[in-house]
Amino acid sequence: VRHNLMGDSKNKNSVKPVNLNHKSIEQLLSIIDTTLLKCYLQVSPAPAPSRSHLCLSATCHLTNDALVAPLLRLNHCHLEETEKTLRRHHKYSELIILYQTKGLHLKALELLEKQADKPDSSLRGIHRTIQYLQHLEDIQEVEHLPRPRILDYLLRQHKLLVIPYL
Image (cartoon, rainbow, N blue to C red; front, side, top):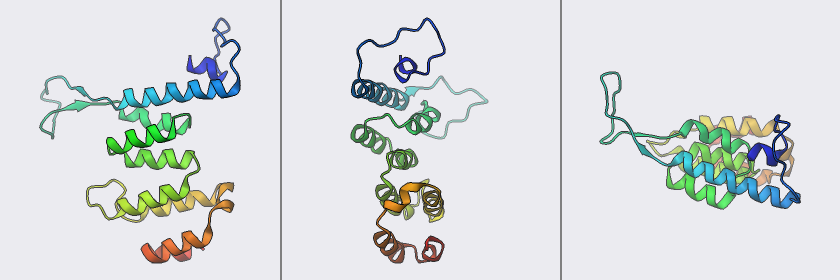
């Protein structure tokens, strides 16, 4: 269904949506992708541990975490619902991907700032912030960012990044 809505189905016999305008298609894609995200993050009990399977937590769980980031890069998830879901599941790296694909670069940088000092965060330290800023240099949207505000942020939080940013 998703591929049919996007018009990238290679099957000649696939059913095309009838009388759907662009807005309706975007809404359907948003519903589908947001639902997929929630399904991917649903935790299911793992099978009993075997000798080759070591579980470090009190109860083992399997998720489809590997599918989350590629889904977010497609950029059809509903922003507020996806943001809430990712926060609930502590998927901050994936939240950065969401913000990046939606062009919400200041939100991404603010999240990176909050997570940089948390010892158990996968975003701990300044390396991910440096990587994000380097990525911004490669896109045209950077021209629309409030450069004084970003510079002020860097001066307050990450002085070592000021020169590379400028």
